[in-house]
Image 1 (cartoon, rainbow, N blue to C red):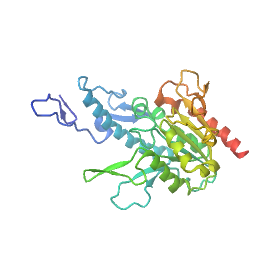
Image 2 (cartoon, rainbow, N blue to C red):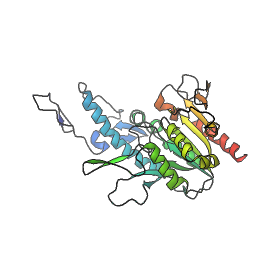
Image 3 (tube, helix red, strand yellow):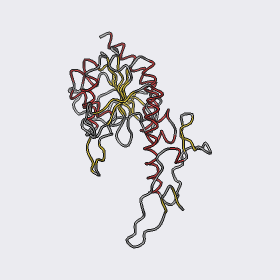
Image 4 (tube, helix red, strand yellow):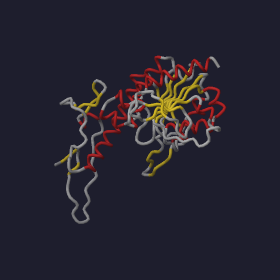
Length: 312
């Protein structure tokens, strides 16, 4: 059986199975986004992982290849549905140097009121997604950051969507790190200095998922005075950060809330763990679902914190 240019065969002697090849667009896989969900073009059915039941390695490679194309579609949706634009990282790089980007709203440099920063977790996800798995299997509403961006824009926020996992490119068959984005923490630091410090907004809110919590903590460590003056709220969803010294991070703790995986109803207060932050239920036991599940509560928290910040 031939699947997308890959002929399955058993190893024979020193002959290894060739690497599979895949289409370069979603339609080639037979899928499209329709009504916010990834569907089979012909049948309307959702994505099927196991197209080759006896070859999990092939199925996984096909999934990863499709996931890269889904990410490209998400980029286009973020631009089209949310009016976001790409801003280079690093700025003013030389032709041929590897680059990545962040998404900024069109008013990012001119909005003098408030900004929302969106930081995803680690792994394969790039700007615009919380979870590749959810985007592929459940759709745009569950897996992407588009609903957050849209609500933020309606509520008057300028928006930055970070891209902390895009760290390298292959240049002349060698891996080359992207200057200013060598790691998630380096990426966040670079865009804070290159874009956030140049912005006019007096009030900043941050939502960070999973490792995004550790990235947020690193920003507090490095830009403590700027952070204390401008950041009025931090919402973390199933964060992986740790805080050993509560006194050192008291200014971060008091403006933060952590929505954690739990079988309790949404916003049920949970016992405070070693991090010291107020911890509440995200209303789901699934790590990758937390950001979507608690979204309305996050924005209510932002509004309450914003008003408190204005009142001093």
